[in-house]
Length: 237
Image 1 (tube, rainbow, N blue to C red):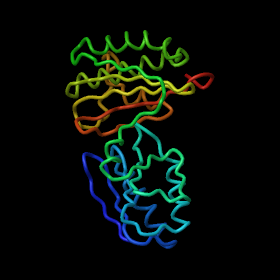
Image 2 (cartoon, rainbow, N blue to C red; image 1 turned 90 degrees about the horizontal axis):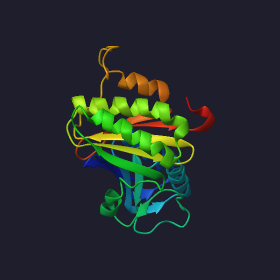
Image 3 (spheres, rainbow, N blue to C red; image 1 turned 60 degrees about the horizontal axis):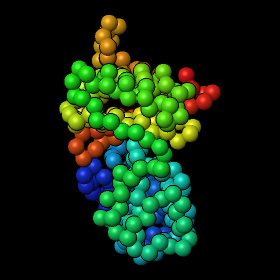
């Protein structure tokens, strides 16, 4: 087995060629995990030049598929002209070629969502808070309404103050959690700043760490997306 890595538009492509034998499973999984560690937009595993796949390799691919998650997490796609009948990669997108896999890196789940472009000025945070107040009932996320408003206010304040336009807010609900994401036009990662209790913003990262079940930053072709997941129901703050 031969492995080759290259990056394209923030996506890590791992190309596999030759026979994938049982002894190759460890290096194959390690290559995918190493790609994930770089936090790209997505990882594409290109198997078009793999001549054979051992059963152990198929099982490893199943395990990778089971752990794959859609936007805004680092997505995983598979490029293979013919999917081995043993693979049956439930939940893992399989595409006939690498180009097709790359086009689907940003595919979304079927969860309900709302999106609003936020003004890149001092009015942006208030606009975002108003959008949250209107969205919580429509999306059925009243249980997280207060925490959601706090996190959105901090995320948008930071995007307006420290990043470039455009700024866009998305709220997504799947029945058990609510995901909030704020995209901006700057690739620079958010960093902690000295806390000023009198300031409207500046508490963003600390607040997200306290209230969110998960949070992260996803690189985009232009800019980034800062996101957080809050629980609903009895587990909500």
